[in-house]
Every structure is written in C-alpha cells, then in structure tokens.
Image (cartoon, rainbow, N blue to C red; front, side, top):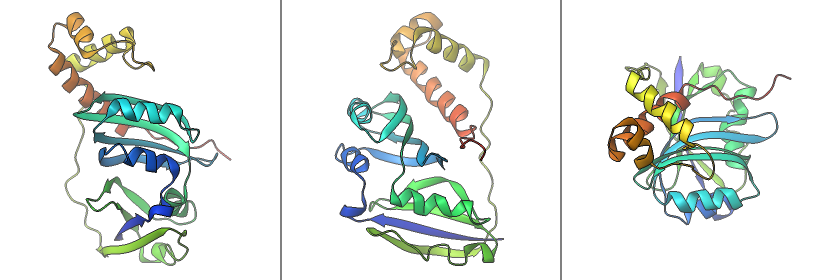
Length: 220
C-alpha cells in the first residue's frame, strides 16, 4: 500500500465564484472533514473553520451555486455543511475515485499559502495517470509519496449523556433551523449550563455526528 500527497493551487481564474466570495471574508478554514462528489454534479462538504459566520451565512444564502447549507458555531469556531455545484478543482480531487481504487485520507487540509492538500491511499497502479488531466487554472504539486504506514487513529467518542441533553434541547429550541431559532444562552437556561459550556458541547457534538456520516449519491 502506498500514498501520494498532493497540493492543488487554483489561480485567480481557477477559483469559482462562490470560493472567491467566501475568501473575501477572510475566513480561516482549518480542514475539510468530509467531501463527496454526488451523482447530480453537486458537492457535499463538511468543513471546520473560524471567522465571520454571519457573512458566511449571507453569502451561502445568496449564492445560486449553493443548493443547501447549515452553519453551526460562532466567529471563534464553526462547522459548516454545504452542498453546492461542483467546480473543476473538486472534480480533479474527487472524480478520479470513481475510476480508480485509490481513497482520499480525511481530513483534506487548507495550506497557509492558499492550497488544498489531499493524501491519496492505494496501490501503485491506482495512482497511474491519476493527475494526467488537470483543469485549466489549477496547479498540482506532488508533495510526497511512499509506502503508507497508518498512524494512530483519532477515535471520536460517542456522545455523553450531557451532550445528548444539550443536543435535544438545541433541536427542540430550533438552534439548527435557518435562520437560527435559539442562542447558546437560551439553551444554557434550559440545561443549567453556561453559554460558553453549551458552545463547547455543541462543537464536540457536531464534530462527532458529522464526521461519522457517509454522504453519497443515489445508486445508479
């Protein structure tokens, strides 16, 4: 088993309109925890970041490329689920998986210099010609490759009893509606916790729940 880690750099023309508007907010995306190219040529993405959450919600709600979305958290840290029209960079990273046996190791990371780093795992033959066709406006650099040795896996614990209580109250109060129907403080008043503690619980809940989901297209 081998791996190859690549970094994709879209130039100005390679960034789609949605990405350009989001980048203008100055958000700091930490990682993409799950990303799937669906049969209807849309992308389902679950990402983690921090920055102007209000601005992000506004852009996603106004963008014709976005089919649906949900954002949870605040400027200090948020999780976002977005389904949007596929772009060339995403097709490059994801579409090849339908024609080869290679897998992408998650999370996919954003680099400090504006790239998108992805590690593919498989046999040596699975990587043959994997990046032969590259869309215009995207530069691909092979960062490293070699035999793949799995490291210690981060095992996400199941929700605790307290986390289940916070989640139940959040759902009942409409925290996950769009627009949001409750604040951390309103959830805190029901659960007897502080608003800060509620926020911490919700971020852990979202990381646990969303990273366990398998998002895929319908069977052909």
